[in-house]
Length: 620
Image 1 (cartoon, rainbow, N blue to C red):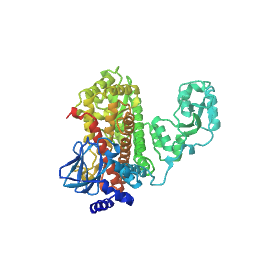
Image 2: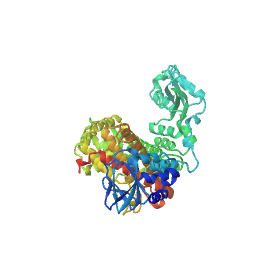
Image 3: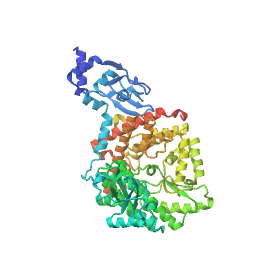
Image 4: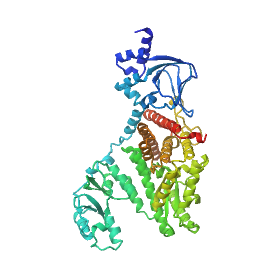
């Protein structure tokens, strides 16, 4: 081998992943590579370029910038550039510039793709960021306490035999059967053995006794038809979340349409006394704001327990949201008892993270009211009093008022359905940056109480208009890419520079926030009804708007950042501090620091791709 080729081989052998190659493969690489010299300031790649070779920095350094100008990373001796473009085979999406006189080795795409067939090299290149991030997501969901109660299969929780009946028997016969078998429910079956309904103690109380029905009524008249069911491979946590979301206490476990048994809320409480279902049950039985506040005060310690178990950030956020939903609903019931029935139908809606089922600890209130179009000005006094009662109650329960005034107590956010359509039309048809900064969360809207059809009709109307609103989407895109992840020079963290949270990372507005904003733009551009971030990204993937691998990467980043955020909030609870979203880098382990950088890098790449595909030129 010629001396200059030996020198190249020795250089490659000293840097990963080439150091992992078999000797004969490594020896062949120098002859397959091209050495190129670039003067300082030379542009090696542009965002629209398709990458044709792997670039290895031999001497000097290059900077990788986003299309908008933000620095992604500086690559120095031994580092590589272009992997993403070689793998995805599309426009690279970044500017690569020599920051000093630089020598690079270029390995053709065909050589690169042969190299990744070697296990260690493939892991380093093709899965360098993705695998590290995904493994990190999996590893942080391992229980610290060894407790795995929430991962118990539901089939392990079923006790006793299945108690069944036919739709034709009387309510009295069903009640006698339940008493004899000492169960709180009976499953109702079709003649072929498939499940068609369920009767519970609560059904007997609410649908028979309270309604004054005869005990000779047929079971088919009072049962819950086509009940929500669980798969045999479902876990206790899934059962918990279904019960929280649907406000039910019995879930049949079904295989092939035929019941195997029933999991009850009592089973879950027995399995883990400190689980959130117990708290939600407690909330729904309270008759005073003081009682609700006492219950809400237990939520932080429950979240701390979930963090130390093998629960994901997604699951924990759904639990936090379910408790918040329960508090809202109970306060609204108490308000209506105090004020009397509403003069016209209305719908109480939540916005932002609660609407997306992505709540963390320490969040404030974001609420609004949609009033039926029959509502007159005279009716507003009732809804103003209702909003004041609920808002004050939420403050007592630990949910501070929204600093921006996005609450149903603000007359601006207490409107008829017709008026709401006009407000959304203004945002969509004549968008301005200042207006949309506060309005974006209104596109994350979910019904909590009242006539849900008012919310659903409004959302359907809005979503019918957003796909073609190019200027509106451009403004939302600009917002989504302006909130950059806190990653700076040399992949170092960019901390808050002043104020109360100086020298910390804002994991809400610069971490999970950009992901929710990307997902929101994608969903509104499609007219997708999904509200949660995961559902919106899934819709973008299904519609071909986002690469499937990119969606998976972004979801992993969203999960890991969310987990670190919740873990920090649990730590605040443990130390007696108020939960927030600001994490000091020095408090993170080296594992968390490295993986957060990977996650921030994924988010930044997704922002760059979004900027290329949305019409930002309309507002520049």
